[in-house]
Image 1 (cartoon, one colour):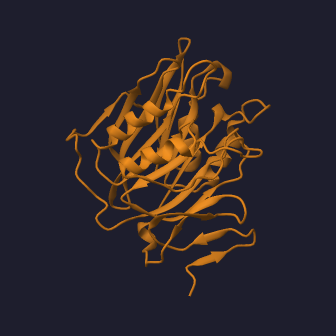
Image 2 (tube, rainbow, N blue to C red):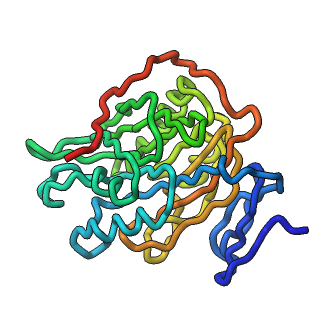
Image 3 (spheres, rainbow, N blue to C red):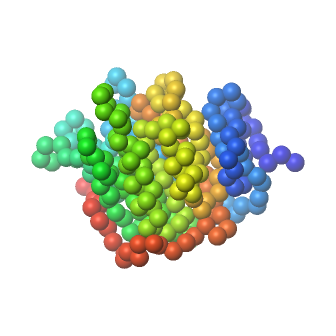
Length: 295
């Protein structure tokens, strides 16, 4: 009996199973997914994660619409959401604490890691929204010649299991200078080995598959999708990523939402046998360089 089912849009959704290395269409003829093998999964162990570059809540060619962004984020129905290009108390977005408002709308706790400051009151960076509690959160500054880039890493309790999750936004290519993003990704992958498995790395890496995939393989992570995510109106390139270690993939999708210039990725995961491991860093419960969003 097949382990897949098809909905009215031709979307092939695997019911259950671990990651393999073979790509197949997610929507026939367009987006790939990682193929899976069937196994039994307790629904209570499922974890739904998503990554979304929200472009400070401004759809292309339009002003900021945080209500629209909140509706988009909430529609993902995720336990953990990694957000990039998030404003906090910035003039252009009416001084809103965007992470807090998006988290509250989705029923999730919000934590924000500033990458750079805007004038005296504002900042711009990455956020993590999650259901549950965090034993440890840390803002990691990445080596940056141009705009400062950071990663927000958290050890989050999800369905009675501790999972390490990352939200990051790496340097984009600039005219006349080679992208720094590859080195920044290497930094994050090295940092992950100081944290307990399983791992979920999410974000706008500003890197294409030929650069990302060899690095993930060396670090022991697997991508959930290599489908195009940018630009949102007609995706042509894959620069947004979710990659995992110590977890099995149930399904993955690039969602057709237009609240930003990127499309979000959503994945359903379940802990794999032997997926947990001790922390290499041995750090105590802490919150380093991270701001809990609250008004």
